Length: 200
Image (cartoon, rainbow, N blue to C red; front, side, top):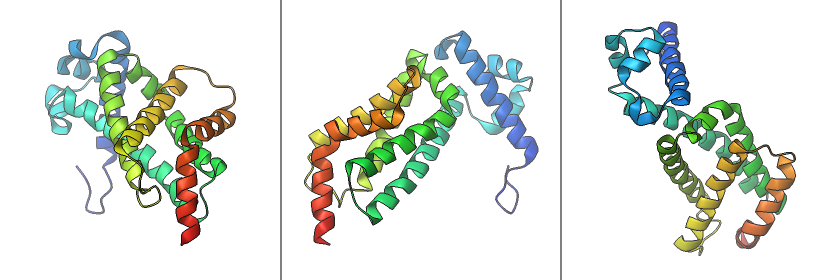
């Protein structure tokens, strides 16, 4: 599927896009459980053999979609986190991480919105977002040493909840919302991180 230089052949990318576009179109029309590989191949106008060259079944396709969304979010928000770690933890700087992450989600807003519209795909996507958010917190484990697993679970569910709310609602002032959320829910953690940062 990949060339020697690691790039993906244009024909393969087109086929994968056609498969994904077909999947998202079908999710708008019926529940995930009702979608078959035949539905996807008919909509994408490809053969079943072509589909199976790329994915073993619809579950692998959906998992790959989620993986790509989470990888993009984790990578981009992680870059902003590293900038904050190099300088200082403040309400504004931490709020910028959340804002940057939500703006990244906005680039794939339609895909997120479609996945959140189906109960099954929404539950699976939330689970994967929770895992991603927890991995993200592990990046600052040394900065927030002493935070309990109880608190970690609260932060993870809060962040994923905010992302879902943003996707399913219209937010007028994202910057203010991110700052207020950070100040109210993450203030104590920021204090711990700043104290640790000051000792270095």
